[in-house]
Amino acid sequence: MKDKIINAVYSLSGVSIIIGVVGFLSGLVTIFINVNEQLSVKWLLFSVLISILIISILLKVIYDLSQETKPPPPFEHPIRYVPEEEVFVIRRNENFPNAILVACYAQQDEIDRLAYLGVVHIIQDKVIQIKIRADYGVFESIPSKSDQLKTIVVRPVVPVTVLQQFSNLEN
Image (cartoon, rainbow, N blue to C red; front, side, top):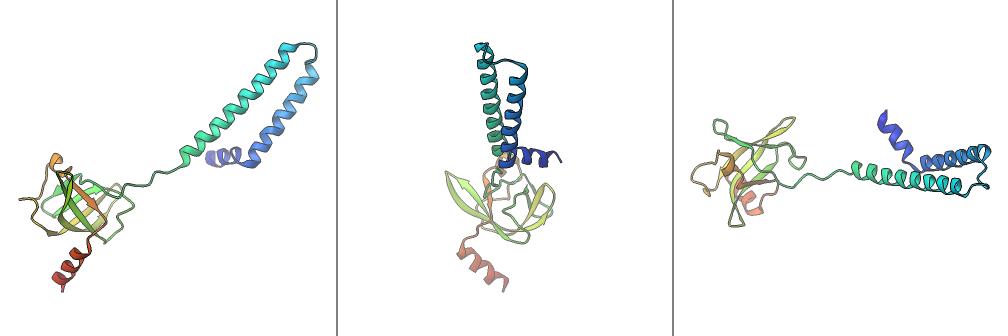
């Protein structure tokens, strides 16, 4: 309900209603206060009106910026490794739908090397499990400590040559 009210206020019709209300209030003020006699009252009312308009415009800009969504990153770092299942656990990311092939790259000296080929196994509320299907021997053993896992980047992009090799292994 709150979102509907905020959307209605910060729409074009909401702005026209605000302008109408300000005009109505200025009419009421002129009934009770003689603005022609005192110059300071005119400037006070004018400055209040301008400051209200500026504040409402700034609130509209802040509201619009808060509604923008930041796209998820095109990669994730594993949070942990479960050796019994041969599964990397990553944070949930919309770029990783269920049952797709993913590539796990080792970042060494600012160069990515393909370390593992995996499949998105299970998508949970906050995490995704990636089952390792192929090990390309970049590491002696699969990293399990958090500082070692930070060197691995999981991407939903797999090189074509690896896809061909993987399909040949499956057949």
